[in-house]
Structures are given as structure tokens and as C-alpha cells.
Image (cartoon, rainbow, N blue to C red):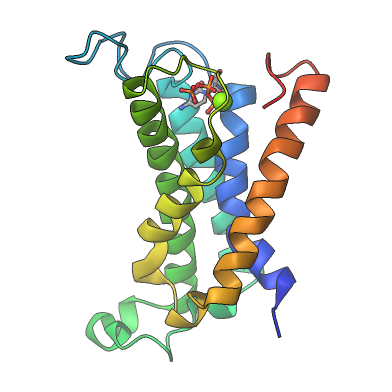
Length: 186
Ligand code: CTP
Ligand code: MG
């Protein structure tokens, strides 16, 4: 049986990190305005240093709060043999905090990586591109994998997480657009 609630709580740092740059982004570009060898922007004007940092920090903050107040089974040590190596210093709250921070960092790295490839395909900043919907989640899960118990990575859990993201990403972008926070509804 899928544990929907704990999966949603697990993935929350990803959604927070992905959403917050729309509110807090701006200023200097992450690619510092540089072009790639193809003459197109490296990442483009949609990726800023402040947006990246705000995503990582707020996502990590959410992870920190959950690590303290709401331990999630996905970070249990029993199912991870590496814990023996790290021993006492690598406690479950620490795993949950680091895992959540890794999710947030992975989200922003995935988001920027997506933009890198988008620019290579000649798609302008802000234009619709289906991989935008899921690439950040895939990279976030990769980054967090060392801290997460293997039991998370079942087919049904992954299908749920990706399906939820495919539904929520356009929905939240549409709402952000209607609220005047985002120029385009995707
Ligand atoms: N944003 C930011 N810094 C980031 C990521 C996002 O400042 N690292 C802000 C930008 O204002 C951006 C908005 O959040 O326009 C929406 O993010 P996103 O949809 O990821 O960027 P796009 O503008 O669509 O650009 P791209 O085509 O490169 O994805
Ligand atoms: Mg976009």
C-alpha cells in the first residue's frame, strides 16, 4: 500500500525549492550572462544566483523542520548498511536533514541543467518544454539517494512521485500566473 502522506512530505523540499525562485529570484544571472560555444546563452535569463540560493535554502529549511518535528521512515538507518560505517555521527535526523538538503540542491541543479539543454535545443527562456516538469525531480532523487533507504525506490513510489509532479507542476505554474507572479502559465 502506498504511503501517500509520507511520500508527499518526503518530496516537499523539492517543491518548495522549485517554487520559491519565482517569488525570490532576480538579480545576477547564474551563467553571469555568458554564452556557450554555440553562441546561445549558457543557461539564460530565467536562472539567477538569488533564485538558486533561495531554492536551496528554503528547501533545506523545510527539511530541517521535518527532521526535527516529523521523522520520516524513508531516512531510517536499519535499511541502510552504510550507517554502520558512519555510526553514531550519522543519526536519523541528520540523514533526514542532509537528505532533504540534497533534495533541494538537486532540484536547483536539475532545474539549471534542464535550462542548459533547453538552450542547446534553441528553446528560449520561459518557453514550454515537457522535461521541465520532471527533470528537477529526477536529479533531486539522485542527489538524495545516498541518504534515503532503498525502500523508497520502488516502481510504485516512483510512479506516484513523478505522476504527482507532472500534475502539480503545471497546476502551480498556472496559479502563479493568475496571481501575477509568473509571466507565463507554464
Ligand atoms: N528563477 C530564478 N532563478 C533560478 C530559477 C528560477 O530567478 N535559479 C526565477 C526566474 O524569474 C524564472 C522563474 O523563476 O523566470 C521561473 O523559473 P523557471 O520556469 O525554471 O525558468 P524559465 O524562466 O522558464 O527559464 P528556462 O526556460 O531556463 O527554464
Ligand atoms: Mg519555465
